[in-house]
Length: 170
Image (cartoon, rainbow, N blue to C red):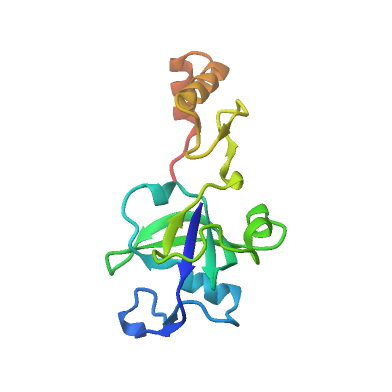
């Protein structure tokens, strides 16, 4: 899971910000939407690890103030990256486990840090029911899922014929 640690609020020039924001950072009284818009980016996030994470929590003054589900990570015009996703509210396990509580990584100088969360685990999408931490499948289970579905139709040729007759491009 990602922890986004926000520093103190400061004004910025909206003309120089990739999202046209006039402020960044944490201050008391921000709405969830304002906090989301500030926390989503832009950040220096090299590598692929960030793209494998499903959730982020936002820390302000060492307390988690917001939880987000990450749909994708996008490149921004300033050469950095940003999160696209949605705000998680009460009743969502990530929100309920973290929001209003001390930040798992404490106060960090680096605004983007990672931590292991029991809420990161989910089940393999092949249907085996085994837990996974990252990705959609355990190694090799994507092929298992494909071949099990082919077998439901018949042979590989039967599957290709069925697919070509069924699938309609947009």
